[in-house]
Each structure stands twice: as C-alpha cells, then as structure tokens.
Amino acid sequence: MANEQIELVDNEAAGRYEIHLDGELVGLADYVRRGDVLAIPHTETSPEFGGRGLASTLVKFGLDDIRARGLRVQPACPFVAAYIEKNPEYADLVTS
Image (cartoon, rainbow, N blue to C red):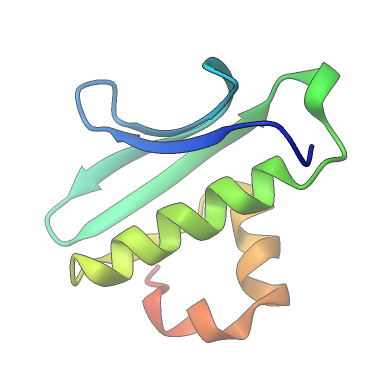
C-alpha cells in the first residue's frame, strides 16, 4: 500500500463517502441527511481490498467531515458503531 494513491471523497450527489485506490472505487459509506444528522446505514469495501484498514480510513474521514460541518451522526451501520466505540473521541457526535 506504500505506493498506492488513496483518495477520499464526499460524493454528495450519491449520498456517500467514497475511498478510491489508484483511481478505483474500493469502498463507500452511504449516508442520509436528516436535518443536522447524517445517518450512516451501510459501509462496504470491495472484498479483494479487505483487511487493509481502508474501511476504517473511510469512516474516520466521514466522521471528521461530519464534525467539521457541525453535524451529528447516527451510526446505523454496525461497522461505524464499532469504530466509534473503539475511537471514543467521536462519541460526542453520536445521536440516536
């Protein structure tokens, strides 16, 4: 992964955060905005890229973006909920 180019994008038109590796879409986190809350119901990474920390990188990017925009998060996706549990610095963003 050392020479690979990672790009993180908020694809607002599609309602998702994306992670691209060398120009290829390899993961996404869908979201739905409800007022000042982004609900994240689904996160996925292409199976051939699993186990490389890309999903965690993507979720961190999304949570940092949510914080920067002054929004809250509803982590409906189990992976996002687990990430927040392991990284309690994001717990203040959570709403039910």
